[in-house]
Amino acid sequence: MSAASPPYQAPAETQPAVTDGTKVTLEYTLTLPDKTVIESNVGREPVTYIHGNHQIIQGLEKNLTGMKAGDKKLITVSPEDAYG
Image (cartoon, rainbow, N blue to C red; front, top):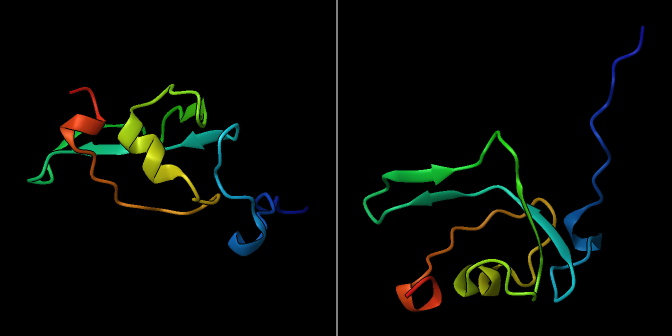
């Protein structure tokens, strides 16, 4: 009997950074300033988009630039950089 090993993930320093044209898949949790959770896809279907194609809100896309697989980041998006 053999145990399945988790998929290999290269160290972050060797992974490509998110740039225009990169296919990005992510999980998110949307919260209010008081930490109330409004929406989350964690544990469900992740969001996939092509970076730079304006498929997600501007403020989020801008803050994801340069991230690498496995990175985690708290992002605050102002109304001007969201839906207005």
